[in-house]
Structure formats: structure tokens, C-alpha cells
Amino acid sequence: MAPSATETEVRPIASHIKDFVVQKKDTLPLPAAARARLEKAGIDLSNGYPERPGKPLYLDDATSIRNVEREHIDAGARADKSKSALYSAAKEVIHLTAHIGTEVVGLQLKDLTDTQKDELALLIAERSVVFFRDQDLSPQEQKRLGEYYGEVEIHPQVPHVPGVPGVSVLWPALMATERKASFRQPGGASRWHTDLVHELHPAGITHLHNDTVPTVGGDTLWASGYAAYSKLSPEFRKIIDGRQAIYTSAHTYLDRNDPNAGPKHVERIHPIVRVHPATGWKALWVNRAMTKSIVGLDKGESDAILNYLYSVYEGNVDIQVRFKWSPRTSALWDNRITMHNASWDYEGLEPRHGTRVTSLAEKPYFIVDAPTRREALGLDDS
Image: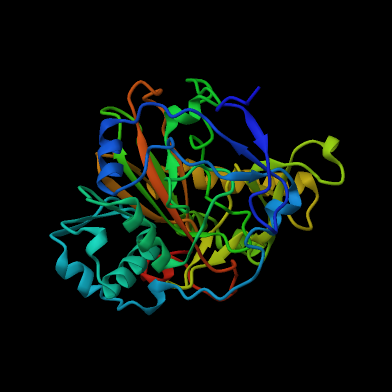
């Protein structure tokens, strides 16, 4: 008897990766706006939507993906600091809070020149997250912009737009078929986190385009790692400067040599304070979801410091921005200097659908005498 479309089969999908699980699931009815966007872009929906990757079963296979150091040239580092090409073309540039978040009005992301793309990267590096409403943007155009900013991450676990690997599908209704969310347990994205911290070259700019959003609720929040670092006293900064931590993947895998040992995460070691290559500013780079422990400290010591850092990062509303989406809006944020949190207050009662592209950046590094954002802007930081 042939397996059904919802069963799981195991088969190899690449010569260098032997063991993958390929999941096939029936497609749910797409929201009308999402379907219209995909059809306009020429996406083939005849074989179901979304397209699912062959996810690795074993930890060594998952770790080997993108496991080679490479050079990264940051687009923001070559931009004119005045950002005149970007600003002069926009109808309006609105800073949403003092420390984080800017909305650019009147520009289409797909039409930006290379000079404007560089200046946008610098604006994102300075303001952490930048928003563009009323975008006419295909998944293919979204991927091309991501490729301009770095190697586009192709996630081994997350479904993607058919024929456009690297453009991940964020569709809560589909996710709910695998793990039902609830008011008390809203889901993985509804907690403070930073994308892909377990990568050898973690995420730089992430671009989320939401074509379908609920009429009420579903906001996303971002917090500034620059400002979180400056919330610490200068003496406490000395305690964490140069320290490293173990960062883990969101997904788990089996140990090939001991499958009965239970699920394990990909782990990598990175600095907990890092410097952004475009601004040269220090930022706190920890998050409660995926920072495991500080290297070289006992568990109690590590937990005490990390829990304090989480509380500073999560608990200061003056270093956060909360954004209310509208249909056809893009948010581009820098994972090197932020963490984010998706509010699930709409509880899945209305449809939501979007596509996401993440550009991988440099291997994180620390420079002891790098300035803070406040210092660079001439603000008190004592």
C-alpha cells in the first residue's frame, strides 16, 4: 500500500548529506492576498504549498551545513553616511522611537539602486529595524535583495516558497497543524529570540514581508542590543566584555553514534558582546531562547549573569519598538544588534502569511575599545 501524502519518508537528497526526513503535507487554503501575490510572481502551486526541505536527522549533518569560514563584506560599511541617495528618494523618513525603529515612506524595495541598498544597510545598522509599507514585492525580488546583503540562508527545517529556496514561509495556520498554539503557550516565535545564532556565520539582515496580517493584534517587538549594553554600568560591562557563550539551534537532531541519547542542538561559541562592522558600535548579543551558558563559568555563575542580562534586554521598554503591521509591509532588521518577539494575541483567529529571507553575515567578533552607540552619538554613557 502506498504511503499517504501526510506520512513521513526517509530518503537521501544530497550526495554529502545521507540522512534526511522529507515531510509531505496537504496544503491548507491560502489567504487570498497571499495567493494573489504568489500567482502574480509565477509561483507554481500545482504541487502543493509550501515546498518542504529534506531536514537532516543527525547532528553531524546539521552541523556540517555552512560550516566553512568565509569573508563577509558588509554593505553598510561602504555606504555614504549621509544616506543622501536613500533619503532624497523617500517621501518621508520617520524614527519611531529614540533608540530603535525607523519607517521609510514612498520607496519600493525592488527598485532600489545599489547605492540605496548600501545606505539602507547602514540605516538598518544604525536604527536596528526599518519598515516599508505598501510594497509590491515578489518572493524572487525579496531573495535578490537578500543576496545583495550576504549569503542567503536556506533553512534545513523550514518550508519555503516552491522553486525559490531561501524564501521561507511563515504561515501560523500551517505551523498549527504540527504544533497547536494556545493562549498559554503561543509558540516559538512568541518569545524574545535572535535568528540563527548557532550558525558559524550567524544572521545579519532578515527581511520579513507580510502580505496577510490580522486586523487586530499580531504586532512584532524588537529590542536594541546597542541600548541594552549601555543600560549596564561601565564596571559591569568590563565583566562581560570579551566573554563567550554557547549558542544553540532552535531545532534538535539525533546523535548518529548514540541515537537513544535523545535530541541534541547544534552548538557554537560566540562573544556575548559583539561589534557591528558598519557602525563599529558594541551591542549585547544574548537571548533567553538560545544562549546556553557563558564559557568558563560554573552554571550558577553563568545563570546569574545571563538572567540579569536577559532582564535588562527584555524589561526596558524605552529600548524597544512595537510595530503594528499592515498588509504588504516589509520589516528589515539586523540580528547582530537586536532580538525580537512576535505577539500572538490574535490567537490564530484571522489569517496571517509572510515570507522571510535571511542574509548571513560575518563571524561575530569583539573589539575592546569599540565605542557604544551613545558614545558615538555624543550622549552620556557613564
